[in-house]
Length: 286
Image 1 (cartoon, one colour):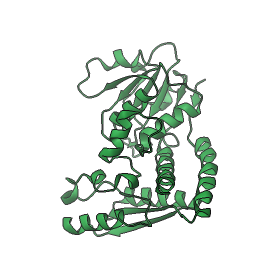
Image 2 (cartoon, one colour):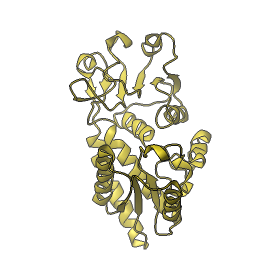
Image 3 (tube, one colour):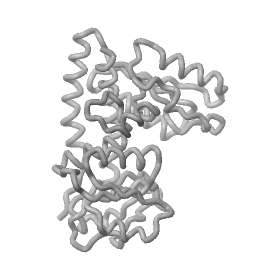
């Protein structure tokens, strides 16, 4: 029987630490404050931002969702982001994606000051990730950091492990490969042009999938010894509208050592990492 790597125990454990850190900051006259810029009325974005606000308030931080019209001019949008980012009472901010079509060419990670970039996408923070200095105050990308935290929480030492990441996006695949390298893992990044994907995945100690294809990873991609750790970053809907991941969970859950469910796996850890970045940014401000 494999281990189901749920995020809830990790979130509950870290929530207490977040409360203590927040109280410590408040005792020094600093209340951690985050601003979320939401353009338009995308239903998924509305849910995500509300969940982030609710979580921040759980441990005592301030979080404000700033709603902007879907018709906002590019110049007005840029001016608003600049205004928020430069406020002294704001410790973290980010733009909720996706943006309306006329704004999608903008690199939002470059708009936020790196010390307030709680998403971890500013070139400065990516540079800190690239350097891999454990003493760095750089803010790490949220979902990749959540993946690493979850793997380690369940007692897995990443050093020396053979990890295969399926997906090379700037949000998950590429930054996750750097985080894992910094943990001394041996990393292979696979993608749509990779030849004979099962040849790579069957040799892996850990497989991380972030491709956005419902249940595409089947037992055909796994080794026969049932000792692999499977991390599913995918958030998809199948043909019946049911929420599912990239992995064929029901058919492979007994053919591995550990696996993350969808929902209840990696998803909540993105918000946890965002909260950790907010507190780190507030602490750095001192």
